[in-house]
Amino acid sequence: MPNFEPIVGRYFTIYVDGQPCRIYVEEAGDGIPLVCLHTAGSDARQYRHLLCDETITKNFRVIAFDMPWHGKSNPPPGFRDNEYQLTTELYKETVMTFCHAYDLVNPVIMGCSMGGRLTLHLALEQAEYFRSVIALEGADKLEPYYDLSWLHRPDVHGGEVCAAFVSAQIAPQSPDEYRWETLWHYMQGGPGIFKGDLYFYWHDGDFDDRSPRINTKNCPVYLLSGEYDSSCTPERTIDTAERITGAKTTIMEGMGHFPMSENPELFKKFIYPVLEEIRGA
Amino acid sequence: MILNKLKDRVNGNKPLTERGKWVNLSFTFGIDNDDYLISIKNGKITQIQKRDLATESGIFAIRAAKSTWKEHWRCIPKRDFHDIWSMLPKQLITLDGNLLPLIQNLQFFKDLIASLRNGKD
Image 1 (tube, rainbow over the protein chains, first blue to last red):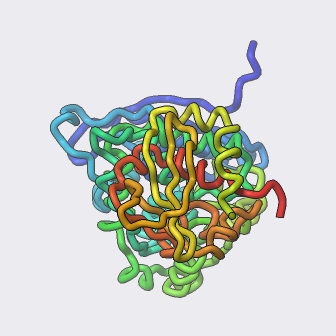
Image 2: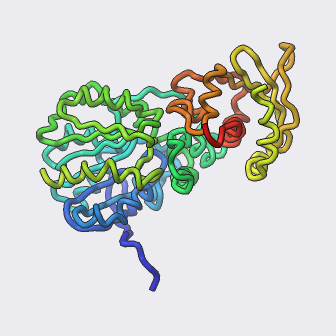
Image 3: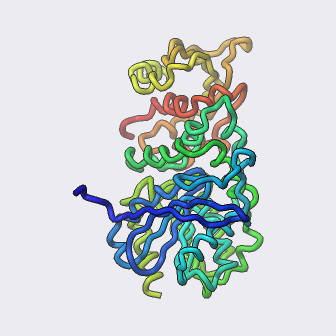
């Protein structure tokens, strides 16, 4: 028999916005549920290293799913006639529907980039449900710096351009193997999906007006951002933390925007203490 | 001249020139107030010349201060300087002209410019 990884992948269908969405999910481990949200334009493969990390999976049931339209999750029927655009409401509904379908009790939720932003929304609105939230590269507000229309047009290769845009977000110290694996996920995204996700990340999902209302005593908030992240910069992360009383902040030196996939070994140094603290709380 | 090594470094990098084999154009590369025209044929640099006349122009232009490029070309650049797309939000570079061929071949042009990166500082 091959030396199987401990990850188990399965499919099931949830209904989001009245539409059936066939979801692909991977999980490994036992213990406290840890739901992981991938970045815009990518999929849950970003979490494969966590899913295979016994130090984590001996205490946490790590669950990572592909959002509808991403990875091996399908777009809803009739997608061809609809432009994909992720709104805050749709994103929240998708994640909560997933968690309830899974019958999770008091899970931790960790998201990166747009996923990180969403965890802040959930820390406010679902504080009783989530044990704590971990926002990787997840500031409550960002400023767009390029025109999203470049990401989806017939005279530019969508996969190539998405990868080329986000390659700037990876730290120069990160190992080449994992840099290019991270970018490969972007090269494989569906047409217009990264662009549709960035609608949430850059426009609809701004949260700086509400983030001060998060009560971290009910739902602890951890913010971890990479030194080389040029969208969710260390400065924006610190600004976010200043608006959320009690939020705990870590700036990850030598890291970019994709800590769990671009430099999984270095990420351990930063995420282990957070997970230990959550487990001990 | 700071760009002297660029032609050899790019043309000697077969995987890079292979990825750029559809690129046939000249673009403007600015260092401080000086502009250079970099001409590319089938992914290889054929000529780098200082731009002396306003009528000599590349299809698009990428410009930054000399100090910015020097930081970009360090073995491990400081954050914000490590990639031309991370320089954008910090306004460390300017882009002008017809950006379509740049965007169509963005990783190629990033790698071409970064070819002057030092192996060690």
